[in-house]
Picture (cartoon, helix red, strand yellow):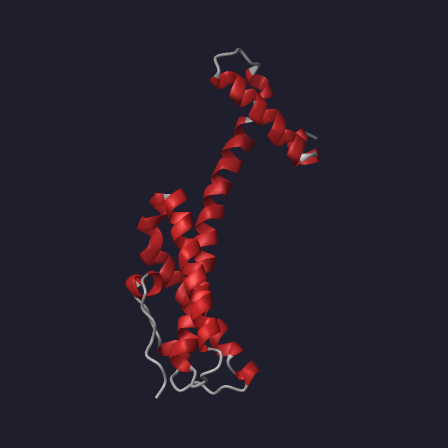
Amino acid sequence: MSDYDADFYAWTEQQGALLRRLAAGERVNDADLDWPNIAEEIETLGRSERGAVASHVTNIIEHLVKLEASPALDPRAGWKSTIRRSRVRVQELLEASPSLRRLLPELVARSTPPGRRLAEISLPDHGEVPTVEPQSLTYTPEQVFGEWFPDEPQ
């Protein structure tokens, strides 16, 4: 069993130290570098960043749906606050990984069904009856990531 399987943290320290030595021009035993697992972990980091953005997008859409479908007035400020926090977090993630910007339309499209579903199952938990069908609501990337909010209920 390799260190990767037995003690992941120790493996990361060992592999990081070997890579730093290699980058500094030192000779290292190539057999000590666990290239397949290093590659896997780097790819996992990328998927994790993408997943973090997708999670925030789902959260934004869930709360946009609540704002648009719910007649309730009291929770609106909290829903808007949640949206603003998630929008800020998405921007931070995009600053760290700008190449994720090209995926935003896809992430909005993929996050819309679960976001609508979360809103749909949450509203009745609070005794709210939607004024519009949550499954009919869609949002553009500009609405999701900009300053847009649905109109207040009449």
